[in-house]
View (cartoon, rainbow over the protein chains, first blue to last red):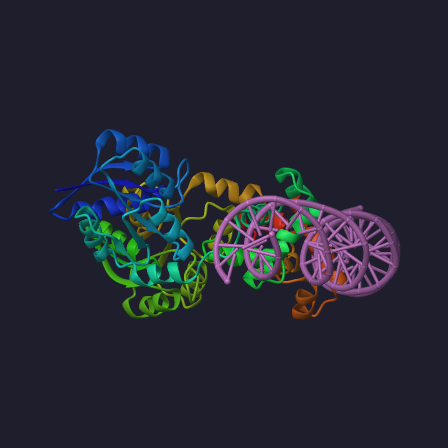
Length: 200
Length: 200
DNA sequence: ACGGCAGGGTGACATTTGTCACCCGAGACC
DNA sequence: GGTCTCGGGTGACAAATGTCACCCTGCCGT
């Protein structure tokens, strides 16, 4: 019997997935969490065979969760279920120790199969997404990413410079380099391209 | 027996909701659609009692769907199920003729009740969201919204001016007015605030 | 009829962004 | 040891954005 913990902040989806997986004769949903911290507590306490988790949740993201499960040498395997078909996300998920990565536009019949695969020690990852993850490396340096992240929030160069202890000219240059790498004409385009590609 | 059509581009959620609603003895899921146009075709053909639909879908949004169902005097009632807790969205949904509006962080047990309410001719709307929808009117004019929408996509003032047959000075002024109304310091902040409030 | 208001529309000027040329240190390679 | 590349960092100048004052039309209330 595969013992499953569900972590998803949308309770409609969480409840529906709990119902769906409970219908499988070899699966039991033993817990549900509304956010990442609650999920971590329940992983420690219930020691499920598998954690099925969204990426974007309050408290801790699914990727951060996976990092902590690995760091604490817990036996639970982690299957990410997410909206984001972004190679950058998958790459970071794998680096965090995730054992599966399934998109929310996967047919619901395949979720149970993915759970079985991951519970059996295998990886369950969308093959096309996996291929894309390694063919398009992240072109941004850490500084460029940080500057872009703040620009995306609407911060002006002066503010970004103050926050990062840089001069405004430096910030301008980082933005310019990021724009060039991403083929963008301005910061708004650069931010959108980076986010859509999972590099932000 | 309540005959239901589901419209949701995430097949995982769509399949899980189909399973969940099918477990109710008084409900039958008679069709599923992956996008808005497919949903409209199936509403016309199958004439379900209720259409349960996401808002953001390829082809036609759930709100556009509701408008068309109403315009074609089809008997199907529309229940929106969405992520967006935004008064602006609810307002537009109601104007489009929607009969229910449920958030995806509603407990899954309540979805069936909402379906029954809507099928019975009543409205099923989150009360708090409804209150918020009418207390904060949309401060943007149509032109301001159009200019902001394009700015959000990364278009520069010159480009926006050309697209809307205006001069760049006019575009600058519309953006400035929108920024002032929203309390933003630049276009990026203005776009974020407007989107978060459902006015974009 | 008139005044006030809102929204549509514009350009001069101040401020910010983006371009470009530049410097420095660390690491890899020959 | 020398050269090259990369990422961190900077400012002068051109281009774009944001501020501000202004005009026009239509609608509404008096």
